[in-house]
Length: 149
Image 1: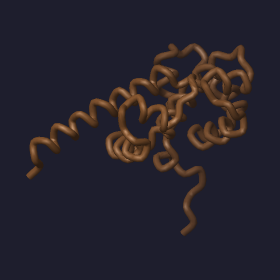
Image 2: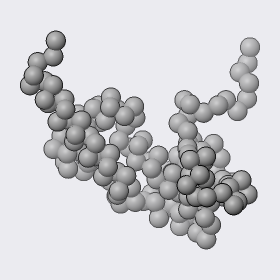
Image 3: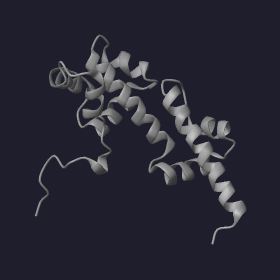
Image 4: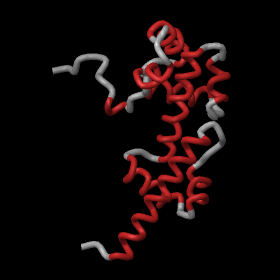
């Protein structure tokens, strides 16, 4: 049986974690790190990371990068910006890290995605295109090759 103070603390932590997640959603293009997010939530970085992973199934950094990649996907589908411009527009400071993470989440490099997505989502409303092209975490992605028996 959980004590009342422990339950109250847990609910308080969940509310703070929700505010952290909302901040990441709003400020994904700004420089954010776990220490700054933790300070804003009045938690230690370690406690924030553990509790965020427990509540949302991924680390704050992973969640931030997923939001950035989702936004990058939309910008690449729209066209008009280079991959480098998209990288900086979504808040990444390293083109290499951006490209690596994009490829991990989406399955193809940003430049390849731009070419493929423009054709695949032509004429599709942006709200539908966003849902259809949402990145899938590696552990959920379908295997590209059949497993060896």
